[in-house]
Amino acid sequence: MDTRFSGRLSVTLLVCACACALAIPAAAAGPDPTPPPAVARVVPAARAISISGVAWQADNSAIPAARLRLRDVVTGKVAAVAVANEAGRFTFTGIEGGSYLIELVSDTGKILAVGHTFSVAPGESVATFVRLAAKAPWINGFFGNAASAIASTAASAGVTAIAPESKACASPSPGCL
Image (cartoon, rainbow, N blue to C red; front, side, top):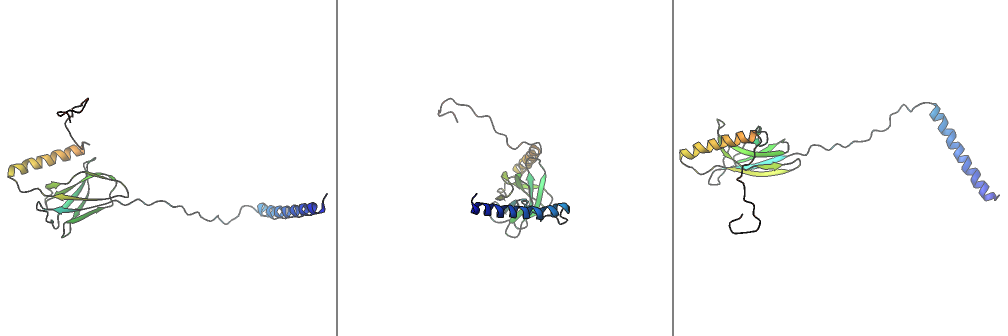
């Protein structure tokens, strides 16, 4: 046997024997009383949803101190309320993802105007507006409130839109949409 090889083998065996000798007393002593270092567990925070907008008169001037409600169109429930600042700007925070609309209401809670429906997901921001309609005869106001009541009732029942059936066309023609 080559002496260089046997010398390396002897050194390797000696290192292994020492390592084993050091490990055996540690294992015989029992488990280590010090806990292992804690591993930092990163839990993502809920992503904030922000809904902001402006309340306008029919002539596009701001409505200072406007009262607004954020309505969930799936459940029909009011998710949040806000009061606009002097420039008509408002913000809703701490909102869950979903489909909503903004209602402009009077001091007594009467719906004056309804904004468009929109959807928002965690981490998203939405900018929207609500605008009063131009002044109309009292009869229009009567039907407007009836429409608001119907829309709120439909939203609470889970109905979000009603559209007429469209004609199905086999080929494009002037009378087929």
